[in-house]
Image 1: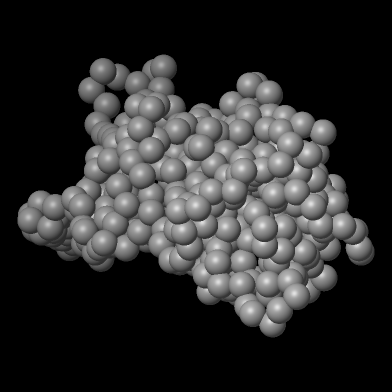
Image 2: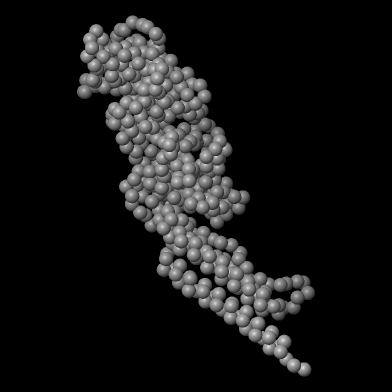
Length: 421
């Protein structure tokens, strides 16, 4: 019996050694959480057993992960992020029904479609926001997200590739080049022929009307001449009507170019400022004209190229373009569960919820007690190498002691077998 009792001790020491070795191997892994072992006594018991029954060895009851925060490593890279608190980043696996995982590894990259992803291709989840940073809700407060609209974070290469959302339903539409238009526009006493009109970052008001955002007029030629227009006219109070079809939106008309400005000069919108999308039309008033929806992709204008990404402590991701315009692309979503030790580890510092962990709780950064987002930094593992090396010595002695017990038991059996009558 002592042989099998000591064998359970050997297995326990081997398991302990494997856990410690895994901790040491991942001491340089971002967001890794160390694991400890929990062993319990094995006892053979029955209603008829005496009060002096002897234990039968040990068994592994559980492996427990320590979710305390690791140290910070500064990288000065915007898409490197860490949570200053107890929350987790939320990432979604590829596919229409992708699984949402929790992670503390904030070393995010971009894929070929400019989606912000982990090294294994999981999409970073953010809350859809207006350009002022307000989070969209769909009114269903009983949903897992609390009604917040969650989407993948995608970085636009150019200003006219932004995403917009409807405030009523939170449904998302992709702008792309559909809100680029070309046409004749009269600004003050000057008429610009074939100017490029771009509307980005706008949000739905009502009745398929877009408001806000930044309207930009560039290029074209001065009407009646061959002189190129070198001015850039911008407005932040324009209005436009669109039609949405699936994930695309098409410009149907601009009801107001708004109050334009260029190089410090302002141009007041006429009271009847209406720009209708048509094949022809007359040019009149201060900021009106005829435009036609662009039939080709006009993305790639270097004046509207993405120049910088920044992430605030509240998780708001702000894109800055070469022309100085800024848009909030979303707010990084944080999450947590009631029982962290019930999470299932899937590797790469990722965990998924289980029946024992409880459901995923969606939270906002800097407001919900789960901590703030630190951009330009990564969380190191919480491994204490000195402690792990001490553990190795202890585990080695446990293994040797159990081996000695087996050896002793074997010698005793040999003595008995050699007794001569």
